Image (tube, rainbow, N blue to C red; front, side, top):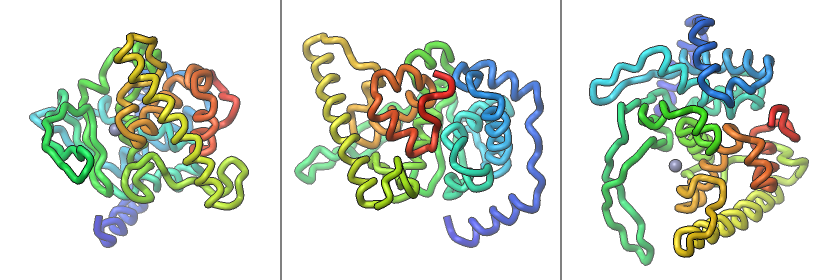
Length: 278
Ligand SMILES: [Zn+2]
């Protein structure tokens, strides 16, 4: 986005008062999502403030005739803001999403043609079914059908397409989505940035290889698949986004299955360890 547009949007956000989220709507969205309902009172009140700012700053549009109503917009805003809960005060935390304004919601799964890199410089075009997509410095696209699934089943699986796409956006802050987001200063008590990055790289590379191996064994030999969306095995960026979903939606299970990644994500998002609400 051009600098003048960013500046203008920031000015506009400062000038216009941030409307409050009506209580009945807020309670409805909390009650529908077990992982939001499980937050402490303090976390819920911060999430409400963050969601109000988010709704104030972003522009929702529906594709294929879909009308994005307040309940849909808040369902997206509240989940998108969960990763920001411990990233400083609301206005500072929301800045992590200041590189884009538009959120496009499709009624169903999207079909898109994308370049697939086959290795050795070969690129082919494939039609893909997408539940969401995040563009670098561009809009986030989401499928409402993918968002509006059974919340209890999503909690058990540790999935949220909203968190997935917004964690790609966080990953993209320092370049493309690659599973290496910018780490906060003093990450896990490590002072030197290069050392912190090395610790991140080492842990994630090892976990990704272990996960890919386990998924291959499950697919080929029928062994029990690990608890985490198999889509994470397609690329390090997807593994990061899938791990973020599980961390925020079912932290108790995630911390049990992937303790080393739980430590990394708690360090990245400044979340308390051990979890306040496993
Ligand atoms: Zn993804």
